[in-house]
Length: 309
Image 1 (tube, helix red, strand yellow):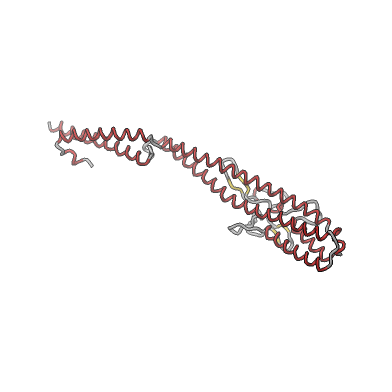
Image 2: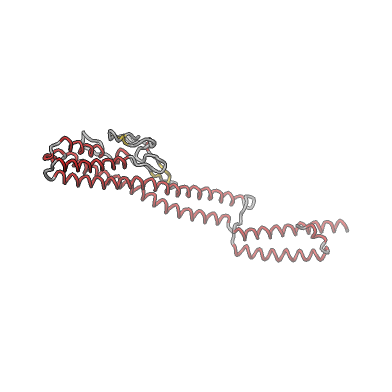
């Protein structure tokens, strides 16, 4: 009889502990909203949730890349927009200069104005980001893109740019965006054996103001005036490239945001719990546990429950 009672108490204790574990687990699911909290709960679903988490993390990194990339492109856009305005103002000055006879005092005043504009253009060509890198220098971002004495390009972009010249960032699983523009192209002029970029053109205008007859400036500055039109067209073309890159980032940002929501929903489906069902189960398990507990209290006169934590 003692052996029978001993087995009975042992089995009863194991059953109660098992039911209590079920009750605690269901309570945890309700409080966390998750059906799976560790790999042992459901190894397959747990691994799926881990994979989904990795994909969410990667997509969120794409979103951070877009924020960084947008700042970099905005710097380039600001510089190119200002270049467009400066070229337009220089052209207006030249129209006035070439439109009639000028005395030496007028020429010198206009020359100083152009010298100020040239310094502005040099500053734009050597725009730096918040890390101190030169935006238009390509791979040589620690050095000025343009030599401000000779007005020549000294960055890494050559006639045929390579991937090594570019700073590229991933904005989605399938898309990347170049963060730095071709600095040589951004300020170039074409079709002239005398000038390579807009800095040299403006310097050429300033030089001719010092050497040309004020009464013959229309002829003397004809080439430079035409090249400024060329530079203006080029500046607008480069700004279009920037706009296309910005649009690509905007589209990727929206797509990534949707993907993150979908991935989180899939992860929640893999590890989440049906709250109504869990509460129903908890109520049933609690009732069952209390009934078993009361039954064994009566049979064992409560001595058994000293062992239950």
